[in-house]
Image (tube, rainbow, N blue to C red; front, side, top):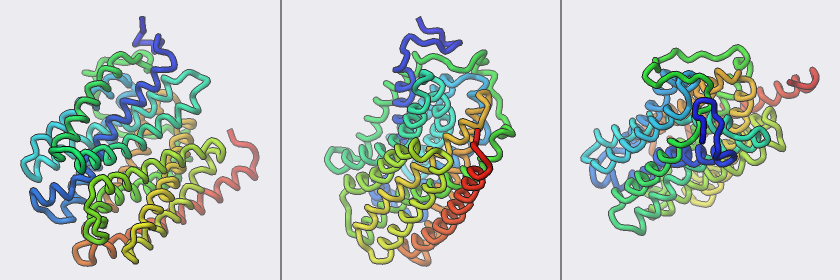
Length: 406
């Protein structure tokens, strides 16, 4: 038998992989609509600015949950929070299936954001805690790979179904509901890892707080996460319109594949972190991210496809390096009883990166056009990434000169 209250599980090594699978399924739902926005625009009729607003509604849902209850799993346990997240993801899919206009699209995105907000920090901490002691380092990769891999599989799945299967605005969400049901069953039987977890009904909104041990690494880690997520946000919100309007690519599967490439490259970039060390991975990830932004600028300026694909691969790799490095630094610095809250705070900053810059691109696209608005975005993010990378490299060198770190 499994003792859910103490975390002793008969499933052993499979437990953290089961949690990671549920993590990936939940996150896939958040990017599922990406290749479908063009179809929604044709059916409902709204501008590119409204696409970015609909996309940003999701991000604000994530941020709201992380700010209000981001660390609630530290007291009521990981399992019940994740089960609530899966239920919200199912409600989001139902809203898209009942789609009758822009309000329900926004509702579906908001529910998806609430689900992701419950999952991001909590599921990351859960995967780390479920892993056997000898697999903790690998579990860090599994958690961030589930996050990024799930985000990448969403547009890949919906893009191919929309292009090659019937009912493109229905079938992707039906498939996702089936996957969510399986994930709910898996999560239900996983052990709890929070000792003395209180009943879920005792959960109360809590003002986000960082443990003193985390504050020294939080700001540089947060800046890197913000910049990387901003690039991914642009790929998932406005790249379908750029591909269709400027490059003449209307194949939904191709759109999904390009967006998937960015998230897949993010997962590969995370594989480099153990060799680099988390302290060096974050600044080097910023430098790789700058190269990805430069390639995006070339694609936008010359209206050509190859640099866009390279931008997805290079920028995604930089984002993955920075994200896994940031998660590793903060998870190592945070006391166990505050780890969920610290990781949730990191993702608050990251998700601001896929809301404010994306809305900015949408606003600028009206007077400037989508390509020029994207160029303004790449310039701003490159400056931010350069400043962050330079500071973090300097900080690492100072720490190495002062002697071995913890």
